[in-house]
Image (cartoon, rainbow, N blue to C red):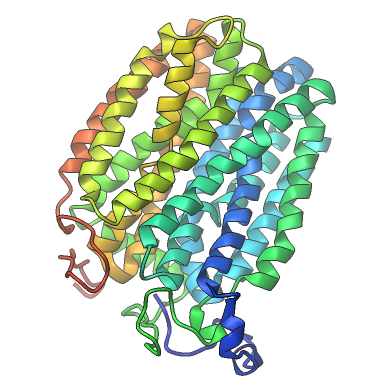
Amino acid sequence: MLTHGPLVGPGAAPHDVRMTTPLQTRVRGIHRAWIVAGVAFTAILGAAGFRATPGVLITPLREEFGWSRGTISLAVSVNLLLYGMTAPFAAALMDRFGMRRVVSCALLLVAAGSGCTVAMSAPWQLVLSWGVLVGMGTGSMALVFAATLADRWFVRHRGLVVGILTAGGATGQLVFLPVLAHLAAAQGWRWAAVTVAATALAVVPLVWFLVRDRPEEVGTTALGAEPGRAGTAPPDGGGQGVGRALAVAGRAVRSRPFWPLAGGFAICGMSTNGLIGTHFIPAAHDHGMSEPVAAGLLALVGIFDVAGTVASGWLSDRVDARILLGVYYGLRGLSLMILPSLFGADAGPDMLVFIVFYGLDWVATVPPTVALCRQVYGFDGAVVFGWVFASHQFGAAVAAVGAGITRDHFGAYDLAWYTAGLLCLAAALMSVSIRGAGAAARPPGRFRVRRHRLPRADG
């Protein structure tokens, strides 16, 4: 994905490279790649804040406006769907215009969308601000940002870095969710929206001034790459943003590995963001648990998800990614099937065990999925992962609105929990069936991965 030249996109300034000395690529012995990754972690954490709010705000919005859970869940569904559908185009736009510009604009969209919710008075305004603006903003960064950055700045520790950056989303829940829940309960839900908007705005200067799109811009190479080795470009030279995203999609859908990757990740989205992330708090409230307590339990999911996702990234550098996905999905499915029996008026020991276990598995699926996309599709891996991630959010959108309708119709969420559990078991079988990847991920340069060649556009 790297280009031979130092310039990135139209209008890049030549002096960005010429005035950079080798000493500026390190800060007290730290490779510049870790600094860029640290800022990316902060940006992903900030964007995660608003994505954590749907579960907190469903009940306050219903009480103030009288909207049904299904109506509010529709806005959540649009948010999740656009969060995914924007991802592959964002990955291609990062090739064209650079990560710094795309992510800065994304954070501004998040701030604008969250700020606009303060003045809304009708459901369509909720869909426009919360669904469209915030969905597009968060979809332009997050996991595709992590995958792109890891490919450009890291040769060694790629899986670990993807795990750490993915954990940034869980850390955003950890940091924001209890705060937002208490703000919504004590000051009103509008204060929660304003807090998220301000946080997103505060991250923009960090991204703009500290992130660089490629190592060549600061006179260095990716961490673990051979000194002086020039970056390599995609076979098509990067292409135009939208055009390349669509071209890669057209080739990917004609390849066999794409469908179990996309199908399994769609079920991943259904069982996490769409179901637990959106409906755990109102489901717990149905059983007499207060919203701050339920939000605290989801924050614990965030704590343990950091450990689980980082560990998964480390394992993805060493273990067959297909086996990891099979284990993760299988255990998640079993845990969801026992969840209905665990709800009660307080967080008992059994519920805490579920929270710890589910937290370790929350987004542990991301590093092995990124690794499989890279192994199977090579230079197109980040864009293919963008489309796989789009399927993740499509599944999340279906689950978000479907679980809300289920609760409105049946008066309980039990059917949603059981259905998601069975689908996770199916995802485990789909994952281990993927062909075209190396048997195991090992340190770069010590083995050759068997890649699945995408059909060319000319046939």
